[in-house]
Length: 163
Image (cartoon, rainbow, N blue to C red):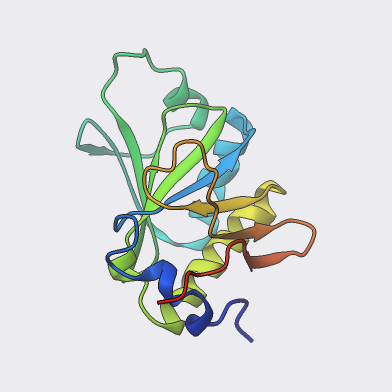
């Protein structure tokens, strides 16, 4: 059974809603948490690609990525839980794990289930909430949905607006 129903969340996945790349956050993290994410990616067999400044290379240990100089090229990890769904992790700080997903890839119940499974896997591995907010919600005051650790499932965190 699906954690969320497409009809209940569809307004949040409208391609005109607050931008097409909502942000997903895991706060109060450490280098060890990042390494747990890297390990999870490797264990699940999700397709992935690590790059620094656009140059693709083997995924190093999290400690090596997060200890690079402040002026180093941007590091990102592209993870595909399925062929048609992409999450792009930006490795900017050990203190939080953030990534983008593309609403164009998350249309319909099947793709929503993929997203929920991905958020659930991350949340369970880290034992931390995983929250999706509208693109650019830097204060994270408008969470939409996320993995609730106590409920051990992905839950709706906001009511869709009518119309």
